[in-house]
Length: 549
Ligand code: NAD
Image (tube, rainbow, N blue to C red):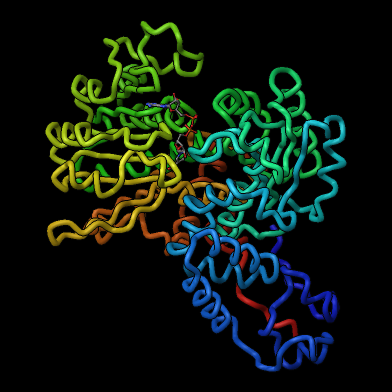
């Protein structure tokens, strides 16, 4: 990873320097720098420290009245002055994560065609077939270490947004830098535009993507195969994160590539890890064991089945047989409980089907199964109804309720509902953030089950250990490492994830756990260094301005 700081002779001069976001320090260029770099007159005379400028930025953000305006302001800053952007993001992660990521990034994607100003990544379309390498060569940086790729088919819980989905890889890569110090010039967001089946998006006159129905079948696979091959040849040290692909492709592509390339699917594996971490912490809070839980997952898509798969292996890791672990998990999709008697199940759902009586709706399932935890990954708001929550509270002293669907508008229930209808006994976490809830004089701080607790640390661990594969064992280790960082103070607030303000420390510890798996399983040609934490920290990008003189 590059941590190279340029010296004065390598810098462009004058206006060119001010227009280079990775080098520009704006009004923080010192007097000697202004002398040496031809900046006099191009900047107003007053010189500010980076801390002062960061404070000004936060003041400006707080004055803005809509989250989309805040998003646009931040993206503008990223385009002008990258270090200041990351300084502000790192120091205000809890406040700004909902702007650069869910829920605001969902809104930004819906508006992406209208707000698109300048490229932050590569668009590869189906017409680039047989030329993908040439397109990749247009990217200005060669030392790429993390790629996030999407085809825009399932953006958050918002569905098919086509090329507008580019907002997701762009936003998530800025979290790689902010949360885990992956240098920005080593991050590459990619949108593979294969069309869209969303007519509203396609018929929008300003839509930036292909106005065609989605490519499917062999031609789609051939395009993706070419992409993976070209990418791994051109950027051999890069880890590739698949993001927001539709169900129809997400599992297939993961199975197709996971043993051939250094890649993973964040919706499946990252979500599972973050959910498992939350469950570990919830159970630690109430002194209970994973192997005694009964889990009902609402949804049977990428997130839900990824969660199921990791839960089963984690329970098996704690002593249950795989069969017994499987018998502790139930899945409910849009048609009802996923059971073996159903004839409409896809291959990947069938693996999780239970030999159990069919129930059509969630309430009936909860009544029958008596789960200790319900986990929502359905993208359907309001599906954790008051009756479902009341039933959970009747069955359990401390019902565990995770409403993971994003953005906020799609959450299975609100934090307020979760506490209200369980007599304030729920251990609650949500995918998108909810403000603390005050009820009868008590304050509850809902945990945010945010994938950015996991994927940046996993990436840092993979890059630091030069691992060639990303494995489920690494995601299980990441979950444990995250759980270990939730303190008694967090528990006292009802919180089962650490504060986002400590995310860089959290990411280092996750990276350590992941790198240890890489060394233990010989997934790298590198020798384990004596000071692994030191090595990991040394790889991290620092957004502090450097003196060029
Ligand atoms: P997906 O499209 O693969 O799966 C959605 C699933 O929900 C499908 O199995 C579908 O049958 C089911 N479903 C639809 N309507 C339903 C209903 N009324 N009742 C029960 N099930 C229903 O999508 P995904 O990747 O699994 O993501 C699902 C949701 O989870 C999205 O909203 C996404 O934002 C969210 N998610 C959150 C996080 C997080 O919290 N960090 C991470 C990943 C995904």
